[in-house]
Length: 101
Image (cartoon, rainbow, N blue to C red; front, side):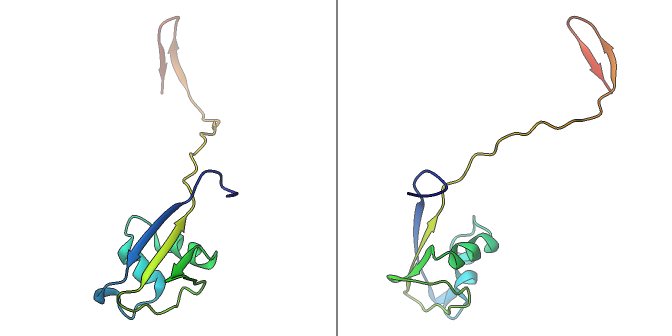
């Protein structure tokens, strides 16, 4: 069972000539631009990235063109709003209206 809850999203990309010779984290940043490099580095270290069928845990792994890279991304967790104590000055208040500064 996945500790984050929900099913992970699996993304598969193919290394192009453009990414050839790059570190795995740099190549993934180029191939999956909607995710940050630090996020992808964490997934690599956690063993959630495979090159071919082999899990890779080193961000410095050098990629070659044509390699198939599979990334298992944990499901996004919805944020929970937290109340904050804010200093609000009430200028006017009646039954229908509140004016704050």
